[in-house]
Amino acid sequence: MSRRAAGWLGMALFVSLLANVFLGSVLVARMLIPDGNDGQRGRQSFSQSWLEMAETLPEPHRAEAVALWQQVRERRGQSRSEARQAVYAALVTDPFDEAALQAAFAQMREASTDRWATYQAAMLATARHLPLEQRRAYVEQQQRRRAERAERKKRD
Image (cartoon, rainbow, N blue to C red):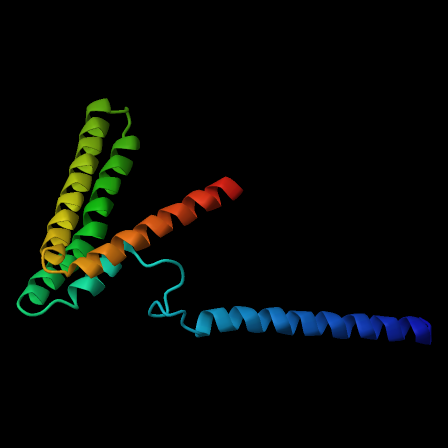
């Protein structure tokens, strides 16, 4: 290899190294620097934003609302997981059991209905004690999110 080619190769490797260090530092920074959402990336979950609003309420309303939102979190994953497992089990029966699958789907619908009833009870317990300004701010935030989501869908 000529001295000139070795020089170009060295320069190319150096530039490549710099680019990799830069990209690596960007990725590390994204993981280490919180974005104002308790270190969680992306948008805040529905129940998380309501839980935070519930925590601003005066006692005894705060305790009631926070307890309901904690119940929402506990039941959310559990009911969906159980219903999903029932559907999976029904799908792999041999011979295929249509009645078992229909029952599993019914269990899934019931779990969804129960989950939404729990959400709504917690929202009611929180919203009834929130000032109008805070409820308005929440609605405006949700409307902005929907508009942003619709705009992203148009672009994609």
